Image (tube, rainbow, N blue to C red):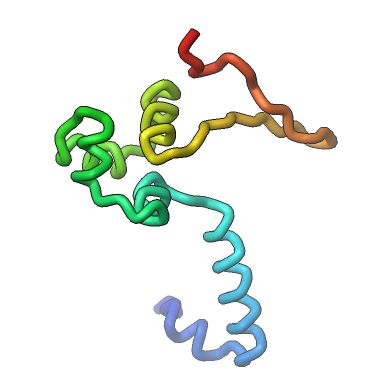
Length: 105
């Protein structure tokens, strides 16, 4: 029989558990969802929907999606008061900001 995650974690030292927790929190901080962005701006789904001229249910569905059109993402970020910037990172190089992609011209 296999070992459960709880059993495996119970066998680790407190120091190791603390390092794992710290690393998990650091990784999580690198990624943010649309929901987290909206909440950080103290907006409800209804308020954001009103700003976008959409229904609250549309915002709820959008927050669950793993893919969005860049133009939809840009419009949503701007409705929250932000600006969308897209960057590309290649090994051994500095990140490059893409211009014109998703911009209304």
